[in-house]
Image (tube, rainbow, N blue to C red):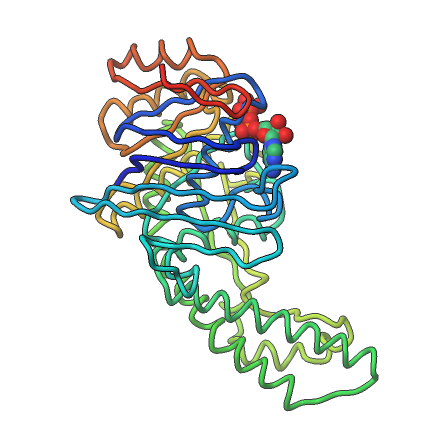
Length: 365
Ligand SMILES: Nc1ncnc2c1ncn2[C@@H]1O[C@H](COP(=O)(O)OP(=O)(O)OP(=O)(O)O)[C@@H](O)[C@H]1O
Ligand SMILES: [Mg+2]
């Protein structure tokens, strides 16, 4: 699968751009702030129906009222046009060909992309939400039922928390209303719990393979941590009810799950060096790539943002090794230093199409 053509109107700092890409390596070079990451984000948007970095309102070019993005994807013999338009204040319109999707979740997973931004250590440093989002996004691309369960769970959780607040504010209690949300949480939460467990056991060996490929002599571990291992969701909700009423929020469930990153027996966040954290993230993303590839039967698009700037030579050499061995599919690589990328790619003897980005204008060179 690859992206052949991309058209942007009022997408972030781009007023109007149309580009043709090649099926292997596309490089975007340009000064800081010129729009390289924004272009990767447009591809991310077409794949996942949202920006990797910001809410929809910030995607519309400043001073404008709408944005439009369109991509032509080649999958085997099929050429499919995916487009999205968003008028400020209205619902976004996402289409495959001329057909508008009823639910955005129907699109997610059809044209998978993996974004590697190695400086982005939020996944390691931030709270559990970032890690849940990472794994949720992968599983959702593989499994429609998972995504639907997640949407349902988040909806029920929000409603239940509002209800708990209303009880406190009005000094009231309605067991029937609370239990109806409990039932929704149990139904969707059990699906999520089961599928997270299944997924992580498939993911771990692939992740470990890539971690030891990048860093030869270290063993990295990944663990799924959930309260549901000890207590079922129904029993947990019941035994936490008094606490929930007191704290006015739901204190038990899969929204409290975490994924622990462990290196050399210790927690990566606390003990890992910057380099180790970056390696960990790259291994997670490469594992994401391979798992998506195995399930879909074709290679996802890989977006490599600023990797040559942010990684040391040893890690760059490993990534170049994968490129050279043709294990990756279509690649988009950004770099603020044109000569560096060109030299690195020439060194491994692969040809790339290079685009220069300048203040929202792009030219092929
Ligand atoms: N909605 C928007 N409207 C107009 N401009 C925007 C919008 N969102 C972001 N920008 C602008 O896009 C520019 C950043 O683009 P981007 O992050 O793609 O740069 P970059 O080429 O990746 O830079 P770097 O090399 O520093 O990573 C900023 O100048 C920012 O102000
Ligand atoms: Mg950037």
